[in-house]
Length: 293
Image (cartoon, rainbow, N blue to C red; front, top):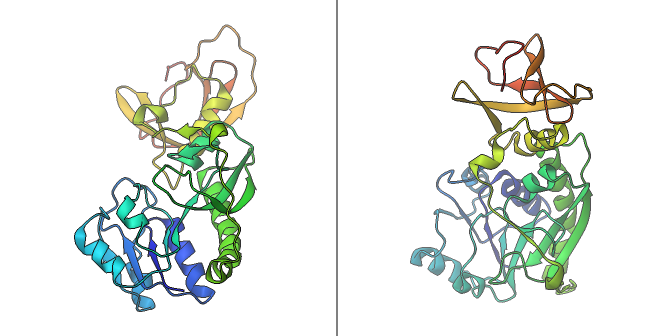
């Protein structure tokens, strides 16, 4: 089975390692030459050098030399795991059997951008690990492997990211022999029940203490490592917040944003309904009790 591999993030590297480990070597790897927009960007070149796999680095795939490189290998498949841009019709038509993509959500629901972040921010208790045939739409092609993945209250972006990686590794071990022998099952998506998550903007990451404590908790855990982090504004400066804890309190006459307590570097702030402890943050100078955030 001849295949190319496209990817540029930590998930891409873990999938490529697993694919090689179970005995499949790509004909060529295409990856980004710069970090671009991906906070979890990773350089695949060292792994490719280790296994003597040809690699091309380019931020756009529709360059003529990229297309020619893909065409010359007479590919059966292209695997695209961890690439933030849509593939063109020309690339999709290159392999004889199709392009396999990956989306960490329970397709046909929750197509689109930032699926791990939105799942945590919205407080979902379940997502999924999904491999599918890519088409010209957004995450809309036939599914070939899907496994439900729980989301726990204690989860943050890193723990959920890692659980999805481990789930996808198990799936790929089963899927590759099926693709090679044409014994996989294609499941058409129910487009009528689909929805699309939008691209997250910077304002989506700002903590507003008029939010309830659960919403703030979900926001912070969604944007923590390996992502960019949530932030608040204090004295016109942006302060990153990486970890928080909800606190059940009843202070109905205290306004949101007021600092109630400081213990060591931990800061308890009144929210709309309760309180929230700022446990890991980037304050260089701590605010004072009674101030507002």
